[in-house]
Length: 330
Ligand code: NAD
Ligand code: UDP
Image: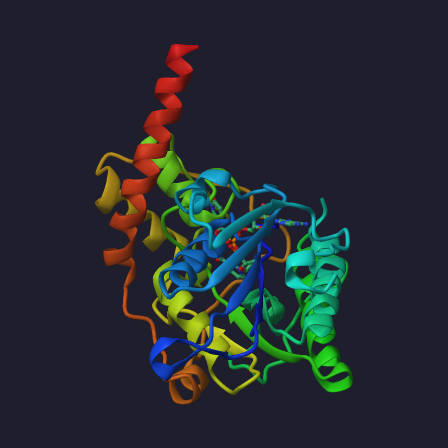
């Protein structure tokens, strides 16, 4: 289970400027909290490529400076090491303005406060975990979820639910323009190697010649989305007129046994599996209904697991082999 995700985006639209030729051009300044993380760093790549000015705030809890190192020499990019649990004053933004629950609640509150002060559009990257161990399948956005408020996963599930609540309160009461994405399990290059999520675990284990650890009987399901599809969905959401929430995920559903088989076929035909005790309250089934995003955002994922996994495997292979080499050099 992953407790290590938080990333929000604030987009500040500075005044329109006149450029030579008389064409009106607006450079967008975007703040990505968690921008050195897996999803955040891919989002930063797309924002930089379209010419945004991008500021990343990250405390490197699970993210890495290497994920955004290729932008460091670009004057349009700024990286700030900071924990969003502490308020931040960003002069340039004008505005002077450990725990995942704190990040999701206090971090979100701080970033909503910043968005209000600078009149920016705010995106909360919420999660399919708000549906808990769902009693509806597939999950549609109006479903309120089935979450244990005092369980071991609660700090993430309830943290994100509170983050959504705060986001909607700031929309209704403070006039902040907000967007809500509910992200389903996403994988791809730059994922943290060891944060315990299933795809990164299986891929790392296969490369390290360790057995792939299946928790429980492996019949629980998840639906896996490739990161570039997610980033396209986030961009469409931020640029569109609808608040959401929107499910952003790939409806292709796999049991963990099936996932292990795909990893085996992709990385190592001799890979083995080992069964381990599962954690409490593990959702048994998860699959997004993405009809709403298809209609209102004109978005749907394009990359299926068997095509996306080899792209992730290449990046993991390089990083794991480098780790092994570094260990041998010590
Ligand atoms: P990640 O752990 O790779 O990235 C999170 C980033 O936030 C890291 O760089 C981390 O160092 C940084 N961070 C954490 N706490 C912080 C704090 N207090 N202050 C500043 N920076 C902090 O995770 P990810 O997979 O890239 O997830 C990004 C967002 O998407 C998160 O909000 C996560 O909850 C959401 N999400 C991701 C998935 C997924 O499958 N990847 C699924 C559902 C939701
Ligand atoms: N899982 C597993 N082996 C692992 C890590 C996770 O079988 O090494 C299972 C976990 O029990 C869950 C599923 O994979 O049923 C997805 O777990 P993950 O933490 O990746 O995502 P989440 O549970 O947050 O959707």
